[in-house]
Image 1 (cartoon, one colour):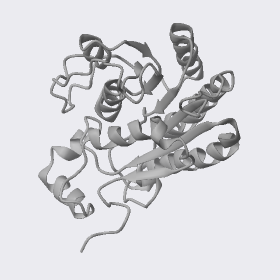
Image 2 (cartoon, rainbow, N blue to C red; image 1 turned 180 degrees about the vertical axis):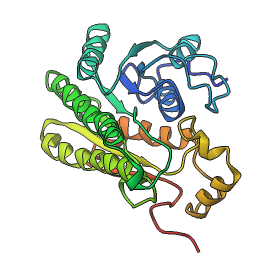
Image 3 (tube, one colour; image 1 turned 30 degrees about the horizontal axis):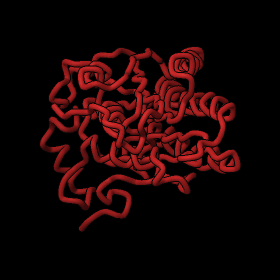
Image 4 (cartoon, one colour; image 1 turned 120 degrees about the vertical axis):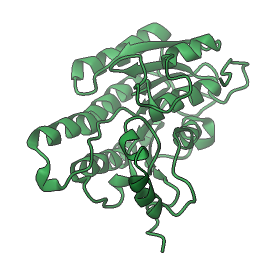
Length: 278
């Protein structure tokens, strides 16, 4: 198991971060990476336990407990991103517990197995738009309200940072993912518009757009040799993605190194959105 113990040298030392969807997959990797660089992490999800179908080597240990066991300050706070009151409570809890909020990572999302658009239902549309769209918007708005009560940090040059996890599906069309793609395109455009509104307030807002990444949520694809072969055809890089590929870019965007970066949707996809390799 990797060691995450703080030594005071991390770029995010003692900054307070919320990661939604932190129990598994990319959210778990992001929480661990932020902590490795010194952040105090509020791990948020529907439940603390990781998905049993995930690929983490320490899957039996909740994310916040992994951090605590390695000397990092961390807590778990339940939040259903489809429920506005729980999003409000998450932000309020964090500020009450730690006195401020520096970093919000909107990672929690709903993805459903591939199907043609005509086979999708209004209920699926409402669920994905409610979590991936409205949930992210509500979370951003509440975080910004808190950021505006905080002074511009003299070291970071920022009041706060938001990193949304969008998707390559929000950049380019992908067969049989119409509603999910529409919800992630909403996240990407929200990122740009809200960043434009609040750049004057010294608030950094960016998004990471993952390609094909091996997680429990997408595990049905990664357990099928035929589907893996098809996914590899669309990814120019010789391998598919891992959660750490996404986590490393999130840490950069959360750090002072990205002080003058805002309103960007950064594809981390092995070239997936560049074009189909021959």
